[in-house]
Image 1: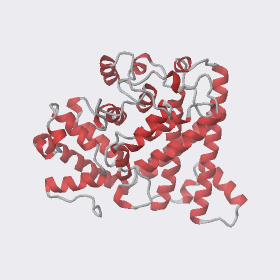
Image 2: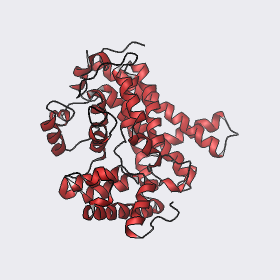
Image 3: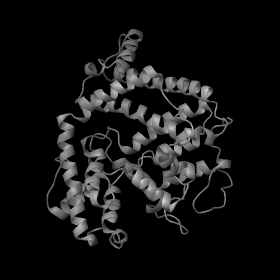
Image 4: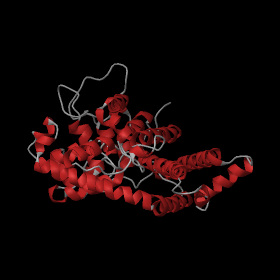
Length: 379
C-alpha cells in the first residue's frame, strides 16, 4: 500500500551514520529490521524478565515475546493509518534491547550503582547497543541503523544525556529532547503499541500465575466490559478460554480506538510531511475515554501485580544480585569477558556487561563470584 504524506519514507531517510551501498531488494527500514532480528542482543531477550523471572515458568512473557507482540500490534495500527510498517516493526523489535536482566528491578539497581557515573537509562542503553555494543561488521561498531529507527528506539532521555548526545551528534536523535518536539508518527505509534501490549499480557500472565484472579480483573472497567460481552456471546466459556476471549476483545477495541482517534487528530492537524508532524503535539493517541480506562487498568496492575508480595520479594533479591555483580566487577574487571575488561571507563563497561546479561547468566555469575545462590528455583 502507498504511504501517507506524513509517514516516514525510506527513500527520504536521514540515513545512517556510516554511509552504505543500498540493498538491492530491501528498503532501508527492512534492512534495519533484519539487522535487529539477527543481532546478539535480540536473541538474549528470550531469557530476560518481563514481569516474572525467567525461571518461574516457561509460559510467561519474556522481553522477546513482549517485543514480538508490540511489533504485531504496531503493524496492525500502522497499515490503516498509512504509516511505515517496516519502520514500526524495527523500532518495536529493538526498543528493549538495552533492558537489564530481572526487568525494571535490575534497571533500578544498575541505575543506583551508576549514580556517580552518569546513571543508567534502559532506552539510552538500547540505543547504545545498536550504535556501539553490537560487534558484527568490519567497518563500524553497532548495527549502523537509520536515523528514524534510532529515533524511535530512544523513547525517553534525560536532558543531561540528550545534551551529551547532541555534542557527539549535532541535530541527531537527542535533539528533540532539547527542542521539545516529537519523534516520527511511527515512533509515537510504537510507544502506544507497547502500552497496549503490556497491559494485556500482564493480565494474562498475572491470572495464569495465580497472583491476581479473573474476578479481580473484571472489576476494572476496560477489561470488565469485554468480559461481559464475551460471556453474553459465549455463555459456555470459562477458565482460560474466557480469559483469552476477553483479552482478545480488549486488545482489538484498543487498536480500533487508537486508529480512529489518531485519524481524527491527523485530519485536524493536517501535517503535510513527516517533519511537520514532528513539530506538532503528539498525534498518535487514544480517545479521551480510552486513555482514562487504560490508566485505570495500569493503576490496577501496579497495585495488585507489580506490587504483589511475591513479585516484590523476588525484586529485592534480583536487585541484590545486580548490586553485588557490579561491586565485584568494579573491583576486579578481569572477571568480565576480555572485551569489556580492557575498556578505559570501568564503571560504564561494567554497566554494559551486566545490562547485556540474561537472567540465568547473571545468577550463575553471581553464584560464581560470591558463592551464594539467590532466587530459589533458579538454574
